[in-house]
Image (cartoon, rainbow, N blue to C red; front, side):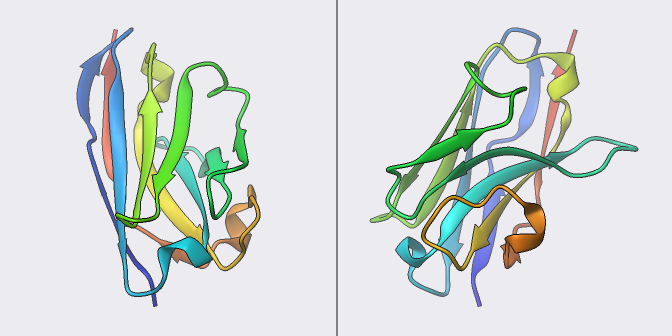
Length: 124
């Protein structure tokens, strides 16, 4: 089992920035590809960004490209998502997830473990 706990969400004005973190415990963090997803009210969960086991490869949704940076610190078993130039459309609950795969995984169904989520609200 892998336990994931997100932090860093909150209320921010449009154009602002947030840095989300996801602390992992339970298994060797570097054995897992990691990802960020989000779910807005009334919408399905959608992919935001993913990173390979060693951070060597990353992938972003079109909506996040140029504004978000996913990173990981395997020594600290922590995943990060830096988000800049935030828009009201970015308002959602953000989830981190772990996949038993060392390569990038962008499909939510392939993730094995999920955190409880952290709320991000962007005001206009």
